[in-house]
Length: 490
Image 1 (cartoon, rainbow, N blue to C red):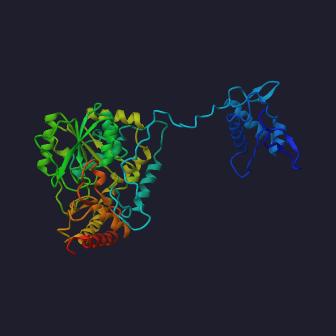
Image 2: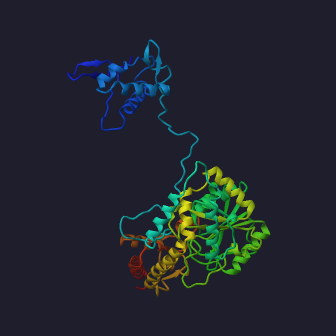
């Protein structure tokens, strides 16, 4: 028998029950029977109560612990039910043979074949103070709180059944999204063409794993959205760089064959340029010649500032067989709702739905009901108009402060979206400027993370979606001061 460690004692300190373990119950904690069962289980699994050990009867143990007999009986019953203890008629409650766990090897607590994954290529930096020009975010200050509450009240009021919803998305929500894509981007689509997803990255995962054959070749913008690039790499595909210049992705006659190309034509990420119409047509011709698909990630095209809209690739796709259009509500509403959509041809849509079924069986119904209300009552359109005016003011404050910096710096990507790219002259080093700014409480990104294994453009990425006009102007003045101070010939 194990060494006696802490026998239970009566109020005078004398031994009452001879147990080789200590038991302590906290009357302010969880249910007493659950506490007792948890402690006894730990002692059995740890071998401190050995096989064959007979536990005290419920009455004496209850008296020793100062609880009712029912507390002990309920704890014993739970442990007998899960096999930790066994009740033998005439012999009481005992520890069965084989109940103790074998000690785990100290050297390895995970399988020997497991390799720790590298960090996901997303920004996790959050400064405690200062101005953060963070890309990929938007503001919640333009949201109509009353309409937001009404939408969720509507979603909560809808009765729920015990069944799963439509994996493709609820029909009324898909119809509302199709109508939204028609209003905002001129796309002709019906509810049957739309598949609801929980954001762009999930949509890309569905495509990478459910649509593409194994070990496919994918052309990807360079520089580009690294989390999206990693999706295809993790799925086992080969990713080739697609050069980007002032007119967007470069499409030449010698562009290699691939099964899919990923582009952000409305506002390239991260350079901010827009893909010209001739380039769009050339890319569609390339896709037809090589029997390839095009993923058009249209993540923030709702925000344009004086520039005329260019037709989406999906709208130029005669027959509608080449382009998978990715839309999202993350930028126009909030990333917190985790909702986007894919417009795709029927055969590919079926593959997306199958993959989504195996992944998580669809999006939460209350979320879809709430967003349907916002869409069908015109609240999302009104919110976008307010947000567009807000972001236009922020962009104006930012660009006004950074104007006139040439030849030391030049702003790009200012016609659309929620970020701009400040290209620096060769005499300035983006990393050093970034460090100077951080010391002054202004936090920006360089393009290093967007071109792995290559020399990135010498530029700063300035996301302004989460800033006010005052913050953007103040941060831009600091950026201007640092660049001027570092400029040669000063």
